[in-house]
Amino acid sequence: MSTIRYRIQPSHPREHYFTVQCRLDSPDPQGQVFRLPSWIRGSYLVRDFAKHVQDLHASAGGEPVAVERLDKRSFRCAPCAGPLTLDYRVYAFDESVRKAFLDTRRGFFNASSLCYRADGAGDIEIGIEPPQDEACAGWQLATTLDPVQVGADGFGRYRAADYEELIDHPVEMGRYQRLGFDVDGIPHAMVLSGRHAVDGERLTRDLTRICHVQREMFGQEPALREYLFLTYVMGNGYGGLEHRSSTALVCSRKDLPAPGDARFTKDYRSFLGLCSHEYFHLWNVKRITAARFLESDLAAEAYSRDLWHYEGLTSYYDDLFLLRAGVLDAAAYLDLVAENATRLQRTPGRLVQTLADSSFDTWIKYYQPDENTPNAGVSYYIKGGLASLCLDLQLRLHSQVTLDDVLRTLWQRYGAPGIGVPEGGLEQVAQELSGLDLREFFDELLRSTEELPLAELLAAFGVECKQRAPVSDADAGGRISGDPPSAWVGLKLRGGETRIAYIQAGSPAAQAGLSVNDQLVAIDGLRVAPGNWPALVATLPAGQPTTVHYFRGDELQETRLVPTAPPADTWTLTLATAEGEVLARRQAWLGL
Image 1: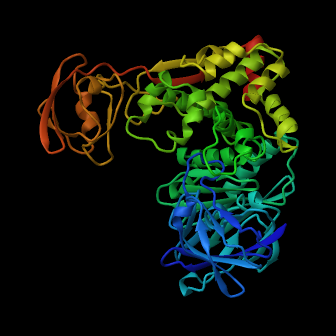
Image 2: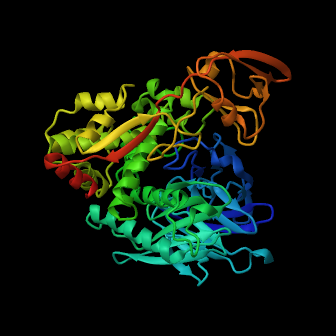
Image 3: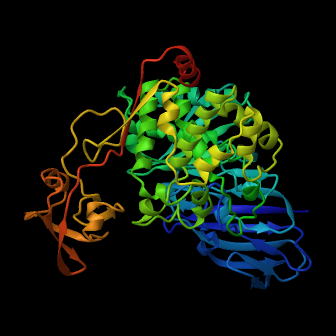
């Protein structure tokens, strides 16, 4: 196989362009084909990275080589004697974790956005050069690619065994802060780009504990040379994408623990949960992965009904590991479960779409939500996490097996040897290990729109469930005191506006004929202004019709609205008095 060499230059940071050169020693004598992925593993949406490529041309021996476009992501170079060289630019101005970004503050890329795959190519070498713009002086580079010849600043030459390895090591560059810490003898680091203030000692201490309990669950496998949390800090952002020895994260400044602030804020808790989630993907997704994803060449959609397993189960464990690591206590953990149960309860789409269908339809639904998404579908993250909790409790209640055992078996059988998990693989292993016939149970969880048996299962572990009305718009579930408002209409406004952002299916607002983007003017003769909507609704008597004036487009409209009492869609979970077998089960699950 021919060696392929890439040269990456952050050449025009002010205009957001990377310059890329690709050199192939021995091109296919029949004409070399190059392909760019259409999607990136771990993010299930066709993103068509080729649309950002410009000015592509090929040459060999100083002479131009004709390029024939085959489709939106592929082309063939005319037969030539090697080496064959490609030169092109890539526009990089996507601040998410999925593509590439470059300006005078920082640079970031996944190689799937910059580097074409050459059919038949073997060993890969990639050289990454520092920017020459004076505004970028002092930049450093962070990646978990295997270094060949690298300077103290991290720029230089790296290698990868194949294209899949190349695109699974994101690259961060800039004047970042690197916070190193050790987890069971493996170097880890939090790499923070963007303006921020952080209590680094506290953050790394908490992450050390979280990563440790995860590695302990899998017997300290797999071995890693290092692990990096590549984190971009911005004013308002949240998200992550897993890789084989790193993760790319986006967070808000308020998510980080501030120096001198000992509070365990909800924002910091969420950030630790995000880190825990992406770190657990080291096993579940990056190594324990669906055969249908593993077999895909990233050209088109790869369909699976098991994303609830890969993302939902990870969502169950991300918070559970905060508890196991001692970062939060059992009561706080149950608040997180209650918040997720509340999110699900407030999603009418849970009665419309199954978890299996949600997984299958991710390519057209999850990453492309619209104003009706909560009414039409369900999240395989939220419901998948609660379904995984139900499965764990069911196994603990009726067998000697836990979901931990199922995951470890999946690791040994599929993850460690690098074999893709067949569809329904987790279901099969759970039944095999437990000796239970779980077919009806899985059908209920995954292939029906029945409500999850969450309350009944939790009761068997000494956890009391209560569904109540929310006490305010800010009530997301959990232990919150207060009295609910007297009326509810089932709509939400855009922040700082009087325009409707969401109408809940079947709600009084829906029955009144109100729609998303309608601009409210007055209710019951009182003007609606940004910020006063909850207070106006709270004064209305339930069951009594009232008049609403609004603009739809430029036409003033009027409708009759009948508020109702707020629905009991908010969950609170508390530790009940327990003894005997119930207490023993709870201790085994929550460590109490």
